[in-house]
Image 1 (cartoon, one colour):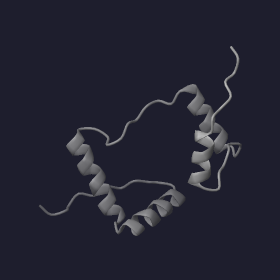
Image 2 (image 1 turned 120 degrees about the vertical axis):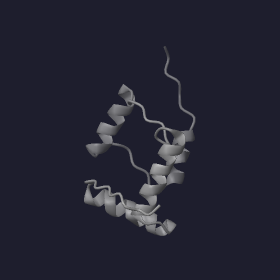
Image 3 (image 1 turned 180 degrees about the vertical axis):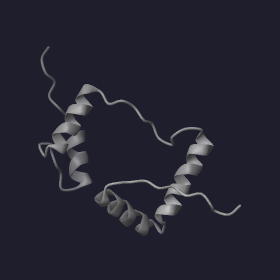
Image 4 (image 1 turned 30 degrees about the horizontal axis):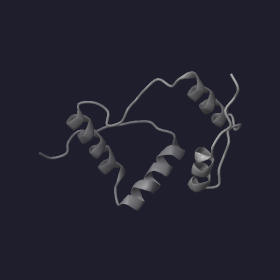
Length: 92
């Protein structure tokens, strides 16, 4: 069966460019990626990843990052070192 259906979607230009850069490195077009996504939805009979409503702590963290107040790291390694660092427990 030939490809005859069209999908039109509006997205932020920066998001589109960023995603296309990743896809290009993977050797995929945006059309390829969307087709793969739709195949996974059909195969799994739902989204191919978990979607949940964020809790209060997650919402606060997202708001901080969007406002430019969140923590940042130079690399994923630095992030993981910080995340895995033993924390002091607060006294109850």
